[in-house]
Length: 453
Image (cartoon, rainbow, N blue to C red; front, side):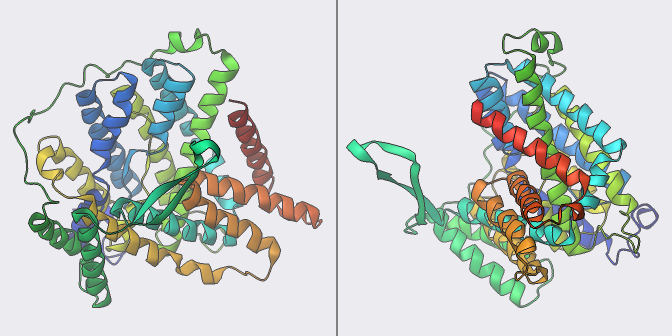
């Protein structure tokens, strides 16, 4: 049955490989089920309810991707999008969290409409090959930076400006002193992963996580499961079906602010997903254009599945759900079909009951894996023609802005804008797709709106 449903032989994979790939992906991103409630609860939302909502939204979205699109991707509440919800929508702009959930719901509906009307598909087809390669490299550096930062290998020092006043702009990264057990464990994890990968040991990423977690017990980093405050399954009632559409459109902020905020959510969600699918799918061969340049059916279905998950998230009580860049961990581990996603979804479901056990895996064991996945993704940099400035300028800014801005979308925005600029000034504007022009204009409007607010 599994062979018929997921076409394992056709995708040159096995049940064991897929199940372990799903487990590896889940372990690499399980932090989100604890971090999302921490961030969203700052709005006044119930922590335990958000915890359940995050897991259920992740499980539903991932299951849909696996069963409908047959792709090895995992979905959950997007980091960055949850910060936008908490600090900007509910913080700076003053909307209630119920009104914020209404925005998330509308964002999901808009993304579904954008997808079923083939706008997403046209955007992907309009992105030049060199920029797709640049997106792959950029995501590789982005996920590497996440790993380096999570491992604690870099710290941020503050230089004092005039009159001894520290400014945010003066915060600079520097190498840590490696004086904590967490950093030492991460360094051990890097060595363990390097040995396993270089020796081509099967399931090297999962083995590295397990070995590093066990070593962490002796360093005091890995904590034994704590069931002292264990709650079987908290109630989701405090956030379930709490979207406030009436309050949203009667809010003092005004219609323009509301629409532009929803637009920001849509743009971030849309291009985070497009970037993830292009970046990871291109390298692995999961999403290959045919000889006529048409997208494969599984990518079209994946785009629809991805956009619908945010609607479920809003109903359950969470910020936007998006396809996770950490899916590349499972793909690198050999995951090629929806069975990987189903495996990860099952892990999400079990985490409802086994939260203390899930929490024992330290970030020090996960961070090295993210770095090595980043290593595997930057190989596409050799496919870019760096001697052609019409290619190298936009490609460079796509690559460099993703990790530096901590955003896939921002990298794509810079790449689009500079791609249009260099082609226009060199009288090659006709070679740029109209779709690129439209979204470049929308990106500029988005930048202007953010600058004014």
